[in-house]
Length: 289
Length: 200
Image (cartoon, rainbow over all chains, first blue to last red; front, top):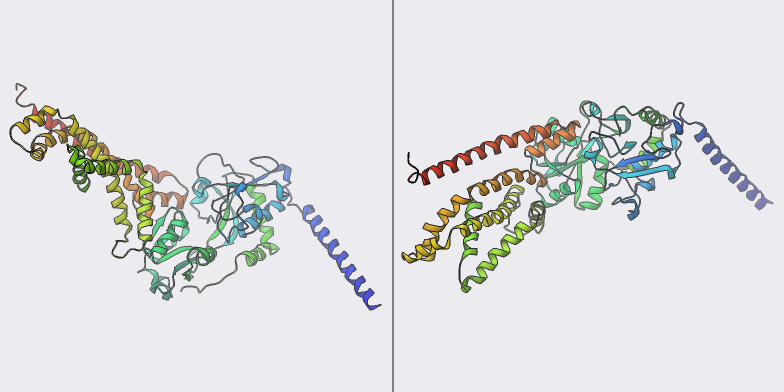
């Protein structure tokens, strides 16, 4: 008797679960954003959402196993794994696109803001919002509030630094086009070395020609974990002035912006962004004073 | 200066006559072929990131040092070929005349051939120096911030492409006066050489 009861209750739970899943699925598509019906969106290719990002796509922003057919190195944006991939697919879903309707394009960062017709609907590759930048492209609202962090080599003097001002005597390096550069010039007060790619900057750190590499904090996990195994996060740089954030990049004047913003706002409201952040971007480090 | 000296040395090595000097000629040819044949950008990467990566004791680590070495190696190869063209353009009778006066091959090169050769190759040499001047932008690869890199930083920082034009202007400010100066040098030289032949 008891056994039967358990079986029955288990079955009931299962049924309830299935019902709940279908219910959420149904409610999602029903709760499409008003005024943003999938058919009415301004798209590069109608019926599909074309998203651009840089290549190689680095963890933890991008994840999943590298697949040759996608053309992406290191990870696979189609996987939905990694913070930016997950955010992009969530936005796509809220705009009414099935997973198969999302198409990824490898686009270098410099190309994302070059004048002319954009080959993507939106672009995301840890692009920080800045008012001057918004003169050239349109930015969505924040999908991640970011702080920069310093990576050094274990046992080197820089790892003992506790304050932002304490970084001044050390040679720092940054990848080209990062807000880390602005931060160092403005708040640390030194001139960093600037590299074409993150890879070149990492090489220089390994060679000991720079003492510290400054990148956004979530990226440091991959650097210290995979690229420079004797690397260590010296500390996170505190926010100075306004909070820096990443936004999706769209062509200036693209009417899609409103709908993307509504989707992101909804994701922030219902805690989706928080949940994805906790899932994809775990990790902590001391904050420099 | 280093480039001019090395390049002349290599060009002279390559013009040495006789089978005894065959290995020397071969080395000079191999050098020119190799460093003219590979892209400068590749050599900068190889020397700038590769050599320090070997962590050899006593070998300099600096990016400025290796960037300079790469440019010197490449441009020495180019300039040596220019010199060779100049040396070969001097008529063989000049050499023969020098030798018949009792000069050795070295003396004839030093006092007869090379002075004439260098005069003839000044314009193409200038070409190479303008090229070198422009290629300094490539050392930015190693993280050095020069004008081009600074403009890239500004462009990426503000999403505005105007700094590229400013950088182009800065390069022109250096190269155009250099061109005019060399033109003047050449014409002065011509005036002096032909001074006896033209009645004033």
